[in-house]
Amino acid sequence: MQRYFVSAEQFSEHAVIITGEDARHISKVMRGKPGDKLIVSDGNSREALAAIESIDAGEVKAAIIEPLVMDHEARIKVTVAQSLPKGDKMETVIQRCTEIGAVSFVPFLSERTIVQYDAKKEGKRLERWRKIAKEAAEQSHRNRIPTVEQPLSWKGLLSSFGDYDLVCYCYEKENGKQLRDALQPFIANLAPDAGARVLVVVGPEGGFSEKETAQADEAGAVSVGLGKRILRAETAGMAALTCILYESGEMGGM
Ligand code: SAM
Image 1 (cartoon, helix red, strand yellow):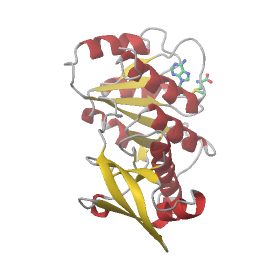
Image 2 (spheres, rainbow, N blue to C red):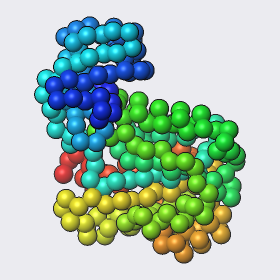
Image 3 (cartoon, rainbow, N blue to C red):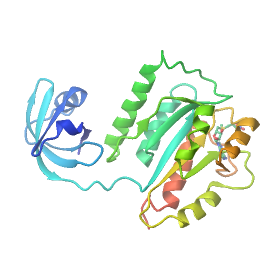
Image 4 (spheres, rainbow, N blue to C red):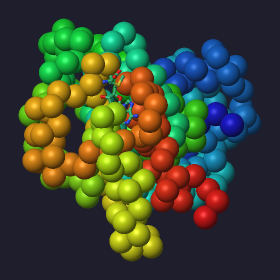
């Protein structure tokens, strides 16, 4: 069943008004008609099953049938910080990690980041990334749309580490601590229903410099390996995110 994120203002007690791109999608792509059911969410505290009542130019009105329980989000809030990869790989990272359960994305620039990012010129890219996060959240039946932050400098990212309960930077030269070694004690010490904020930091195609790893250690991050195989920059975040959610029982089975 198609799902749409709308603003809280578009929700009233018994109905919801869908406008813009979503209204166009319902009428033109889904060829919606009165009576068709859909799910609407304000991406925060309200989600409901609704039935289309009317479709006018650019506006769809749907009657709320029943509220839905919002229990699709993981307790552990994982943010993926990704050194900007080449081409459109950041879109792949955002799409796949949204499906898996990331709550936020922080693109950043590090010493060996190949692409340059000029905030003034590239507002469009940020807008596109946010659109990809919304669409992937709708497709994967998330209750919330992950945020995509403005790209940070390496220093800017380092100074954000204090906002998290655990910061792991993925380092393929890490022969000691693997991700699981850092995760198990961290998860074991979490109160049963406690949420926690975890930051996963992934380097660029050229990897982290020695200086950056020393700065990350200094800033309280834990260097973690993801096994003996070298993963692509766009794969590593997905792998780490999946391990964290699996280890904390957020992938079912516990
Ligand atoms: N230095 C790497 C090489 O030898 O090809 C290039 C970096 S790798 C393509 C891109 C990023 O993915 C790294 O900066 C790291 O964050 C992450 N990564 C890839 N494989 C990893 C592994 N086995 N363990 C931990 N991190 C890994």
